[in-house]
Amino acid sequence: MTSDSRPTVELAATNDQPAETLPVIGQGTWYMGEGLAAERDEIRALQQGLDLGMTLIDTAEMYGNGGAETVVGKALSDRRDEAFLVSKVFPWNAGRDSAIKACEHSLARLNTEYLDLYLLHWPGSIPLEETLEAFERLQAQGKIRRFGVSNFDVDDMQKLTACPGGDACAVNQVLYHLGSRGIEHSLRPSLRQHAVPLMAYCPLAQGGRLGRDLLNDADIVSMARERRLTPAQLLLAWATRPVEGQRDVIAIPKAVDTGHVTDNANALDIELDTEAIERLDALYPAPSGKTALDIV
Image 1 (cartoon, rainbow, N blue to C red):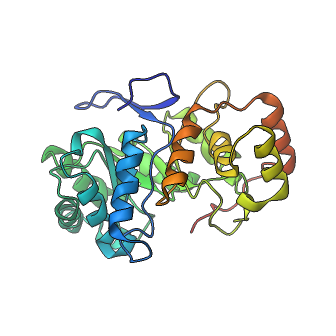
Image 2 (spheres, one colour):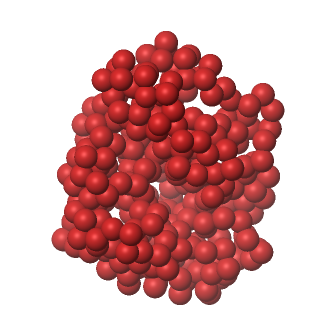
């Protein structure tokens, strides 16, 4: 999905899919399709993001009760092959048969024959074995290419990988930003050990129990200004920074404003120096112990 020199994250090859190289910044769609902005502006923003190299687009059946998927489908009209398309299924729709129907409804709203990645939105009461069976059937039918999860903590991932086929999980999408670093203690190291990348939602600190208004934080604003960046660019560059020489995070900020889309895309070219990372670590340090998974 990317051929330039910008930083990327690789999804491992599977039995029927080659390895996939993705930009470290994609596009989120939470709150799209809900009338908060004109649909034409949401469509234009997603297409602008595609033009600027943010080829991963993340959505879900939950967002706007399918409204966001409809917007994405319109944005990708005649451009489907340019995007790596991700959607998510409600936990209560994740049964061996209900997940098939939910996926088919998402495909219809998205006006596409397949998803590049289909995620279980959060852990639920339906046995994971059932969900995995449905995902395998969807793969066999060509309706999804990979599957993954969202909002799974360490124990959830252990339960998943203990199930037959669970070790084929492609990503775990979780809340992650400078003000919410709990995953760095246990979850992120565990995922790195198993070569499972993270997808970071709310990377600009818009939500979660530990959410802070970092975009207007005086220290963040000052650091960004010193580097001729916007606060959003600084936060995105931090979230997608390499750790121990390896990149394993794809951030998915949502934007409708033209300038914000451009800022997000330009963050793909920003490499923070050691001094900047150390200053940010001092301002918002990672926890010293395991914390509950932060969610929205």
